[in-house]
View 1 (cartoon, rainbow, N blue to C red):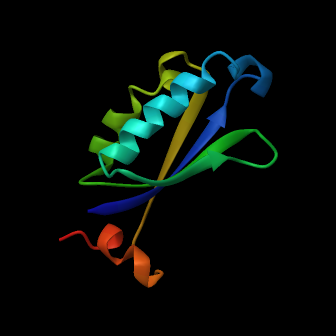
View 2 (spheres, rainbow, N blue to C red):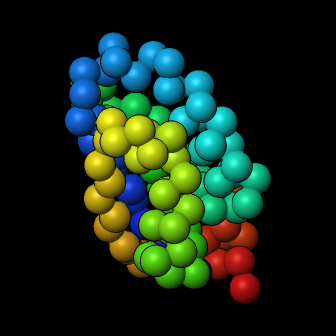
Length: 99
């Protein structure tokens, strides 16, 4: 598995996301259920969000996020940063090294 930080940057004022936000969070829940996501939440100040994710490849993670209501409604852009976790809390061992 490859690990990523996904930076989501809003293209509209945060107030314009009110109707889409519940759908975005429901979409993210599917990523948690599939074991792709570890953490997610808004940046402070609320100019976007951050996600800690894993996937077999960057392309598979990008394919997952194509279904995000934010992306489908063109209200956010995404930046993917791959990294190799070399240190982690012991309770994350199965998530970091699932094989």
